[in-house]
Image (cartoon, rainbow, N blue to C red; front, side, top):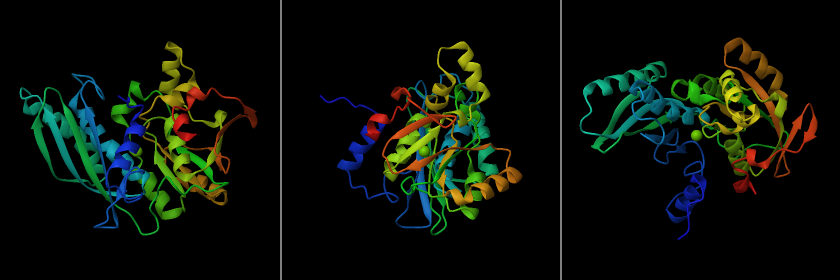
Amino acid sequence: MKKIQSEDDLIKFIKRKSCSPKSPYGIGDDAALLKAAPNCVITTDFLVEGVDFKKGEDPKGIGRKVLGMNLSDLAAMGAEPGQALLYAAFPKKNSISSWRRFLKGWNELAKKYKVSLIGGDLSQADRWMIGAVCIGTVKKGKLFTRSKARNGDLLFVTGKLGGSILRKHLNFEPRVRESLFLRENFPVSSCIDLSDGLGLDLPRLLQSSRKGARIQLDQIPISQDAKRLSDKAGKSLIERAFQDGEDFELLFTLSPQYEKKLMQRWRKRFNTPLTMIGDITAKRKIECFIKNQKRSFPQTLWKGFDHFQ
Ligand SMILES: [Mg+2]
């Protein structure tokens, strides 16, 4: 029997064997455009106790995360959040107080980004499994996808990367406002949210766009928590920034003519850092540089490298 190699492989298999239209209507971006309402995109994400979070974790953090990761996917599409469905299976013995905590976390983001809960479904299981479906609206001609990066475009990343396991993975801020600002002011050519780490999500974006990239390693913004973790464990800082995952930052491309204007306006508007980390090339490979000197780079850093070939 053939083993499932990776999540991406399974997704490709399902896409191939099912009735799934091409992106942006089907599988292949952070959310899908709705055929019935072409100004709407839809996405879903769910969490399983013991896999995505520890047993005994504060449900408030889970509530925030379940909605936050969906909002991050909407942000990756340039969509304004609107409505959500919530689905959960959980052990019978749970009391209403865990739901109270869960909703407290959920509402932190729902209020801030004006998301109404419009339905869902509940069932029983031997552990918590909880997810959401989120719908957002997009503007005609301003939908972000993974597939339209052009040669010479610059690659930008929001926030700082790595070490999210210490705090950020339950407490991140989905980049909804930043995404809407970009949508209104700049012709972003492609975008993805960093859920599995730059080392996996950058190759996903490049593969969709059929492009390569030159990455300036010394420009990668690294979080304080990644530094804290690297002191303790053997992983290098750059490995943490590429592999840790759950950063929920935006990685996007934009023509270089907008760089100066983007940086100026961004600094006035947001505290969220924004960093230019490289550029897009026609050669379908990833090249790394430190202070403009080409460096060979362990390919193991690119978890998605195999798919990229
Ligand atoms: Mg995503």
